[in-house]
Image: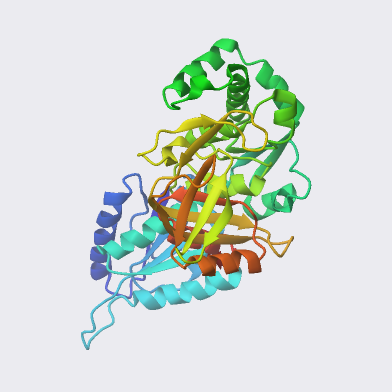
Amino acid sequence: MLAFVPLGRTTFDMAFAQAQTDRALQTLRATFPDLIVIEPIITDAESLERALARLREAPISLAVIFQATFADSSAIIAIAEALRVPLLLWAVPEPATGGRLRLNSLCGINLAAFALKRRGLPYTFCYAAPDSPEAIRLINHAAAAANALSLLRSAKIGVIGDHPVGFEPCAYDAESLQAHFGVRVQPYALDSAFAAADRVPAERVAARYADLATKLSNLGELNRAQVDGTLSFYEAMRDQVAAEELHGIAVRCWPETFLKRDCAVCASSSLLCEAGVPATCEADVHGVLTGLLLQGVGATATFGADMVAADREKNTLTFWHCGLAPLSMCDPSFAPRGALHSNRQRPLLMEFPLKAGRVTIARLTQAGDSNGYRLVIGAGEMLSAPMQFSGTSGVFQPDSGAEHALQVILQEGLDHHFTLAYGDFVESLALFAAFAELPIIRL
């Protein structure tokens, strides 16, 4: 939720300041109808205290500070320290008349930026007219970034089992994640998850099978008992997400699911991702967290994938995973189908090529530094292409060029998993990184 907080000083042209404030408010309300508005313009200690009392009562994720006129930084620091949310400092241009400086708005946010930066308090800024489309564009990105920050602060991620030996990018430090982002990680035993799957009523599994049979053209050709093993695991994970109020879930998918349940769980993760619950294999907690971050800035379904091929001549990279992409990512010209795991020959996996469209790639990583986090951000076009490998895969053309992206991935020693989402969220992710004090690695 956004708050609109105008600041001013009565020694400036308050009539002009009020007119600017009214225009800005009208512009914002058209985009954010549930905007929390502080009125009148804060000009003294008493109006500041009244505003703070109201702001503390609301679930605010971003405070838009409208610098109606110049003011010192005291009020802004009080607001930032009271709310502990990012601020967007908004200054407005004023025409050069050769006479009185009526607002001096820009100098006001300059003074505030100095004070905020010294204290390590998160902020961004906007210098635009009150009814400017550019102002709304910037505020939308800041609102998305602040929403993601708020989401992670309250998030709880489940992890079933331990990551496989030698898969170091999937290792995580629960205390460090909570300290950096506020997210909590709750571990669960793999055998307990299997037992929960065994308790799922047969009629629920049958209903899920019937629904999925309308979406996968060949489901009836696969071993029914093995497919039911996948679907019962999905139903058990759904129950766990609801009961434990989880925002995402990471699962150790192999070899135990093949050996103890005689099935693959890839389709379970696909169905969860389709339902808006980020899910990953190999107990990849950072992958779930990245999926949640992308959803926080506006993505719907997400897909955790490996980079498995690079074509320098065609300027493309291929992203793939066994079969856990959500069905909404399927190329509309292709009928999605169920598949067997390529190495273990067990169902159920999704199988289809990814649809064409604008794609953002991200990863919260500890690559190169086990004590700190960085945010990998990239974007480009997923191309319309035949299925590259069994499972779910897509041919991606990075904006920066395939060679550049490949060099960054390997020279930085980045994780082998990346999270993909349809849409362009680069600017919002960059603002999130600024708010969370994360260095950025650009693909």
